[in-house]
Image (tube, rainbow, N blue to C red):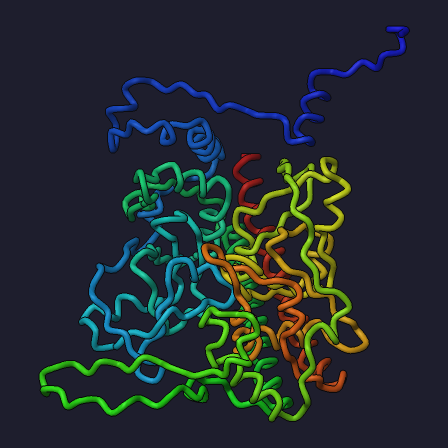
Length: 498
């Protein structure tokens, strides 16, 4: 071989190639003065002194902007005390939101608590202009007060940061990679990660001009306004779906459980024991399934009500061109500029995808194409938490997605993607999906079982009327993400460029 014809590659070019292939491993090393160990909280954990934490401090210090600690900017940084909560039903109680749910697009109410539980119950209610920070488990997740949280009680695992002016700017800074680095630096705990209000209070916040702060604040407010609009559209689509299809709002009281037997008379000082829900089933209806959850009459009641609606139901596979799960393969994660976003099941309910990874297009190229999602796909989580629904917008077109997300590709001549997504998000869709779960340790759902879900075969004009609201909602949701990301990136660039 003629050595003169061998291409010359520089070390930097080789490094870039290794990064693209996911082969480059950087071992973080740093040194700190010994006297630092005796300062502040006398921390001995290496993460507290890691280079990343020190680098974000330097970025903030060298930015050239005036600095104030978050505790000086905020009116209060706190979380409520823990106390016993009395649960009740939706007609009498206050909806309760857990720490995980504060970053959800449509926060799910975990349960309802009695307003008479404790004199401190008011401290749990979300307050306007507050920034919310998760303080245990997944530490440092940031959310902002929105119409969706109004009147709801939040867990004591959420720290409240009350800011009067330009709260959107403070939110953007804390959400940035720099703000997150400063927050996560102070995490403590061996089994469960924790953070306390005094850690947040000591975070230095750079303060650019009022005009810049106001501009970023307005971008964040716009993003949250779009999310509220998107949620309103989904609520409208849900109401329209029930109205047009002639379906009652589903409630478990509609399920024909066996009546409770006559209970013996108990002393008045003994609490009443609730009767367990029971049902019977014909042996011919077992369908080779012996797990009781498959036969709970909730799903049968749902199907019965669908047949009594305005339009005869058909199985989902008859209005979809394809329902599939992509193959599983080893994924190589790379920096953002070398790959495509990789959507996972946990991202579907979130306002914006947290901890989003990027997967290499070069490695396993023959598999990656099967993982790409296209605009109009309906996504459903098929393992772990079953039945979370998403719709691929123009923003997410050609992203990659996990094999734990089942793809429903509508036949556009027979099924509108927004209509299918709207139906599957209702109890009529959810109860059918969850009834088909199998698996002893991890819940699973198959393509064929999903295809057997019954859905009203409404005329296309009705499907479009409902479905277009859903499409608009997901487009607005992703538009909000673009605006928020732009605001956060602007904060980062301001600080990095000084």
